[in-house]
Amino acid sequence: MNSFKIIYTFEKDVKVTEVVEAENKSEVIGKIKDLEGFVEMTDSEDQYHRFDFADVKLVTITE
Image (tube, rainbow, N blue to C red):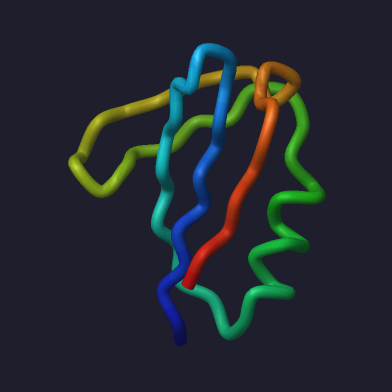
């Protein structure tokens, strides 16, 4: 398994970073493509986030 960072960018340069484990980047992209409605997650600093995926302006995936 590899560790990937998913960075969700909103307006005014607000960002939320999620760290996920996956075999490859394609698996992470598949997960992102299926997102709709509200997303709930806890980030690497143990902070809880809940947001509407429709408000996301940019998604960046890094390994």
